[in-house]
Length: 61
Image (tube, rainbow, N blue to C red; front, side):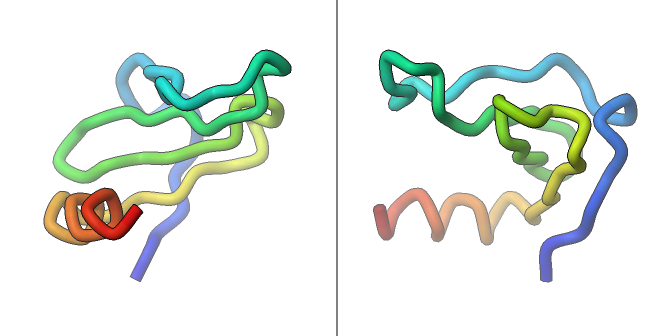
């Protein structure tokens, strides 16, 4: 189950390589889990996924 984390509690963010020209995308930070946030609203919160769940999600895209 995804958990929320404050934006300040994770390491540097990396923008998705699939972002469009308008910059509409997600950003990802890797820690003991994978944190994800909306690049247009970075202070709106994050979701955190265990690495195995994140890997499964990526393989289904």
